[in-house]
Image 1 (cartoon, rainbow, N blue to C red):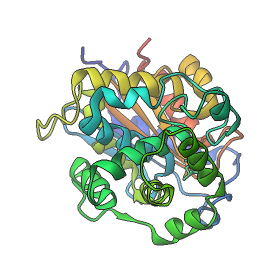
Image 2: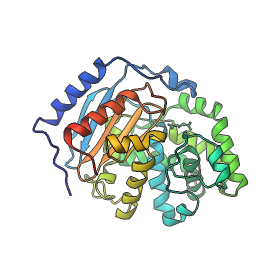
Image 3: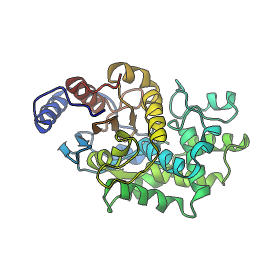
Image 4: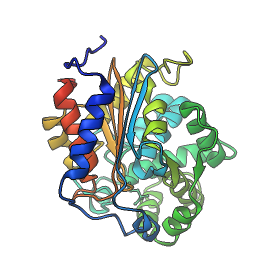
Length: 312
Ligand code: GLU
């Protein structure tokens, strides 16, 4: 059912006011530096974009500037994997919230190498394994998928971030090797990690992200092209896991205060799906202790409240 935002002000004015208030707030949080290349980004960048199913894309601030999508890539890789494997994926990765940090190792050993969900690193590495196995060249296939969804043929991987991730990926390598020991990684660990680091290192803007993910707000079909990207059932499932597990170990609080399927990344981006209406994408690099962008979180929380967008 389409949602009518609960305000009479034009969306552009609402977003301008929101952005003005956001940048006027005292700065809080820290830019991620465990991947050193991410620490070089200008911390004062701040943008927000809203794409609607009608084809409107409203952007404010640095919403057209590319940034490292990091864990937001896990949404795209999951959908691409479901296109190939369908239900086969769910015997290798679960659909429960982890309640643990995104790169935690302990739970994985207790649970015999089956990650709790596809949005923690271990789960995304299993998804990456499926892509490496199913595509002769998974990295170009992943990039083409993003270019097609966003309509932006210039999307690229950021080579500095990619090199930095690869050099500092010991914890992800540990997760992958542990899962390999349980038989839950089919391909060579090095090839799987190469794909995983690649997908995290793509740069996209808020506008690119909002446009790309409209199919999740539209039961699996891109509204502008009419192309089915995933089945209605898979759109439901992806949104359900985004609702319970997309915001790291702050997902419960986000569901409580915002009530939208969402995914964040340590590059400072957050996307939120508004079924029947569109997609919000916000970006500001400094992160809170959970790894979520403080200002992007603030903007999305406030906008969802103002427009009455909660799905609950
Ligand atoms: N590439 C990052 C990592 O694997 C992604 C983390 C994130 O955005 O949650 O550590």
